[in-house]
Image (cartoon, rainbow, N blue to C red; front, side, top):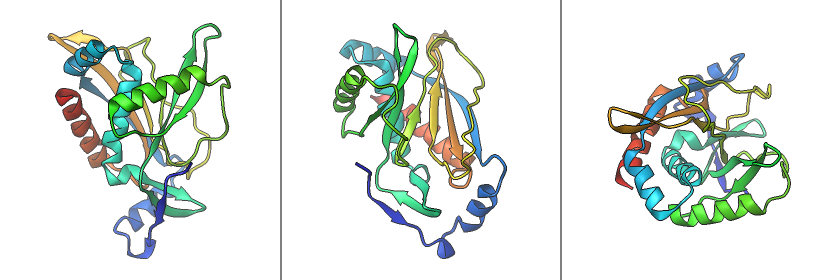
Length: 209
């Protein structure tokens, strides 16, 4: 079920000009990779025997939901803002080595989300259940390698403003556990300052969980 949204009065919207300029770009999305210190978070998650993947999906989604710019989308050509963004993530079938895309609503707590997401991922038989909704954050982890850059396929749909989150294999550096983390966003709605806000918020969440 789609989350409620509100249509933006673009004529009086402070981002009207910026949105138009980037919306007309050949490639309106951009991707940023940065490192996260997951030392504390990983320890806590392991103690509770929670899925690291599901836990990080929740953490990133919670922090992104708290930043208004991450909830803007295009719907029928209009700019809207959703009340809440849910999640869609890839989940690997180890036998076939093919992934399925699983949709899970956001929950109030990490614990609730991890239980719900794990159950949904295991029980879903289809690889794809249909086109993704507008009101999701997409996650596609790459836990087999550490990386410093990542790129993505381009559907050719310039109004596709769904943020895409990835991360690679974590590693130890200077006594800390470090995770390469990436986010791809639509420049009509999100600038570097908003990526910075997300990085700070997510790091604080990981530190304090």
